[in-house]
Image (cartoon, rainbow, N blue to C red; front, side, top):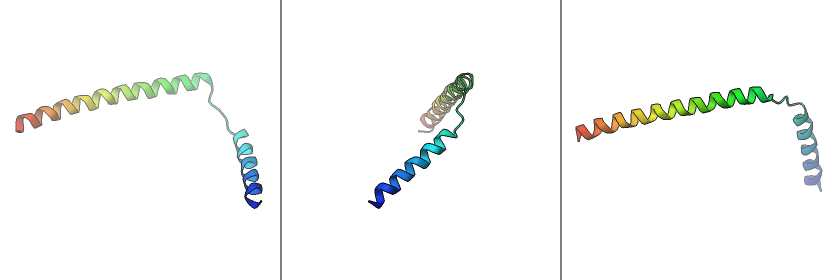
Length: 62
């Protein structure tokens, strides 16, 4: 029974904290999404170039 009461209290407190959260607006979400996608593309290209370079170096050595 104690577990049920503790669980109910936990969910009540969680719900109260959830109500205090300030959510981002649509413009902010779109802006940060574009930034994240751009960063991922740039890092993918960088890692690919480094991989090709290191692969060429290893193939020359071996």
